[in-house]
Image (cartoon, rainbow, N blue to C red; front, side):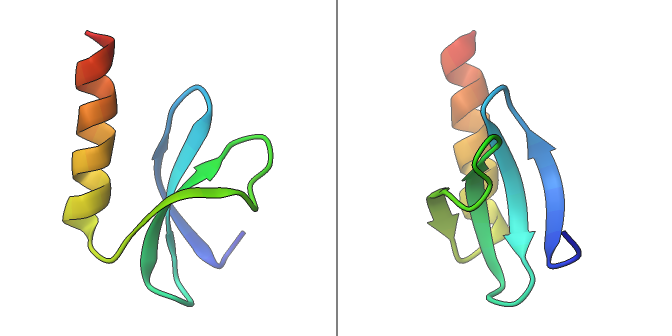
Length: 57
């Protein structure tokens, strides 16, 4: 897993930077190869994570 930088997780997802492509990704926690969302910058994945948290409140 050295090819990824992990930012956090949720019940079902892992939030990572794929170092080779420099893409920020939302990956499935159980089937890590499944990419649900992909962003070109950190702001995109941060906005996604915050939106997920706000929906749970």
